[in-house]
Structure formats: structure tokens, C-alpha cells
Length: 398
Ligand code: PMP
Ligand code: GLU
Image (tube, rainbow, N blue to C red; front, side, top):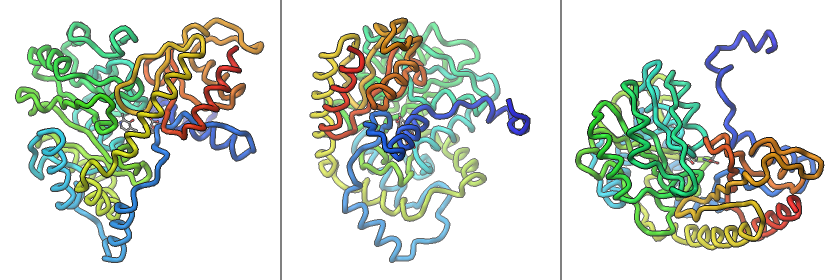
């Protein structure tokens, strides 16, 4: 390590770079250098933020919303979040249970920082969203990975949860719909996990529901809807995905008062609260009927069908059928240990790099998600890009 780097904290030297953002940056760099790269690495809707939301932001600027906001969010925004939780999730919260942050990513970071002491264990069913394990580590927690396979649709069973719990287990984190597998936990599956958790009252659950509306099968159930889980579940959500607002950076939690109060305290020392204009725009977004964003979900559904059909035609890509989100997470074990175009593929990272170099398609290695034999492809891309990317991949691996 360079001397200068040694002067940095162990905390940052031990932190992994976000694999999703790193691959997106690499793809951007190659594109700028003139390479014809198709980016299927970043989980970002390729739609523009709907006009009615943009107009609300412009109005907020003209109405002189320019001062610090309450640290945990405008009261009107919290009310919109409360109404959303009631409407979509049948969850009842009051203002003291809501904290608005700079993206769901910061919401997750806040929760980790306020709940974990050094050595506390956090159960992460694999595959999990890329930043979970590093956020946990930043808070001095210990990620405990629970592997799952395509046979259980990448979902953790109650027995697996029970086996992973130790006296040090403090939290369970998962996303449903899941990034990267697209799997959705049914009410029954969540109940089975909740039954295990009843025996371990010290465990707090983080239920990341940011893909809630990008659901192709219909039902979304929140862990906090069970009366016996309500007091120990933090429900995380945000507007990045459903409203095509990734850059606006607004996420939020609903949860137990003591956790919300602690997140508010932390945020007061770290950011002073989320951006005022974005917060005003999100009030309008959340108050709109869900039908306003259905056109995006319909298009994602078409693209899912397209990409699954095309992948089925490429040897060695074994997929589950994602029920939500906009990713496929094929198992590509078939290629590990093989030599393609003179290059030996040691692992999924090599395979993902191979696709970047030889197919000009950016994907993300499954390693980053705790799914070492898989890669993730985002289908939040045009049908044309999806078709071209799949034909390039097919050609490169043939
Ligand atoms: N959770 C999951 C599962 C995600 O995929 C993402 C990526 N956007 C986030 C949280 C963070 O979202 P944001 O910070 O953009 O609100
Ligand atoms: N959540 C998206 C993804 O998984 C965006 C990138 C990020 O926030 O890490 O690709």
C-alpha cells in the first residue's frame, strides 16, 4: 500500500468500492473513450422523472424553498410518507416514526450506525444488495451471509435463519423484491421467518422495499404488517426506482420511535437533512396515484420477458424467473474454469470482465452480492439495447 494511503483510516482502507457504481464508472469511461458499450450494470430506470414531479420541484424553487429543512424531513413530506405506508402497506406510523434521508442508501447507513455495536452480527440472505455488507462493516458490525440457491428461488428458509442466529445476532437485512435476484418473499414465507424471530427478541429486521412497485406478480407484503413484528421492523423505501428519481436522492424509513429518533440525531450531525427541493418534489410523487407510474412497470415487464427469452438461448446461463425489480441474476458456473478467447475464467468477476472486453456489455459480478457463481444484468435498458447486448454475449461465449 502506498504510504499516503496508509495515512487513511483502517475504516476506509478496509471498505470495498461499490461494485455497481465502479462498473458503471468503468462503462462510462470506455464510452467516453469511443467504445460502443451497452450498460446493463447499473440499476437505474432509463425513464425521465415524470413531468408532474419535475413541475413540483420548479414550483418549490420559485416558492423559495431554500432553507434548511427539519433534519428528519418536512412535516408535509412525512405526512405523504405516512399516507403512502397506509395506502400501500397497511402500516400505521406517526410523524415521530418517519425519517427522510439522502436516498435509501443513507437510510440503511443510518439504521446500521444507530443499531450496531462492534461485533454485532447482521444476517444477510444471499444474494443481497451490494452495499449491505459494507454498510454493516462501516458500522463495525459483522455480516453473516446465508447462501441460497436458484432451487429455493434465492430465498432464505426459516431453518436457514434459525441456524444462522447466534447470541451476537442483532439484525436481519433483506430486500423484497430482491436486488439482485428479483425474488419476492410471500406473506407465508415472511411468517415462517417471523416465527423464528419470535424466539429471538433482540433481533431487529430491516425490510428494504424500494422495489415494492416494480412487481410483476401482484402481491407485496411487508414484514411490519405482522403485529408481532411491527415494533422491531424498520421498513426502508425511497423514490429512486418507482419514480425514476435516482439522482434526486430521497429515501425514508418507517419504524420504531427509538430508532427513528436515533437516526434523526445522527443525521443532524452528518447531513442536516435531505435536499429541500427534492423533498418538495417527493411530496407530489408520493401523493400521486400509483397508476401514474404503471407505464414504467409495464415496460419493465416486457423487457423481463425479452431478456429471459434471449438468455434461455445462450448456453450456460441458468436463470430464475424474477418476480420484481429489474435484474436477472443468472448462474454462469458453466463458464468457470473454461477458457474463452484465450482467457481463463476463474470466477464470476473474470466472466463479467470478459463480457465487458469481448462483448462490450457491462454487467456486475455476483461476488459483490454474495452470489459468487452468478452475474447481474439490469434490464432497465431499451429493448434494442437488451437485444443487442444478448446477441453480443451469445457471440462472445460461443
Ligand atoms: N436498496 C436497494 C435494494 C437498492 O437496489 C438501492 C439502489 N438504488 C438502494 C437501496 C438505494 O437506493 P437510493 O439510495 O437510490 O434511494
Ligand atoms: N441500486 C442500484 C444498483 O444496484 C444503483 C447503484 C447503487 O446505488 O449502488 O445498481
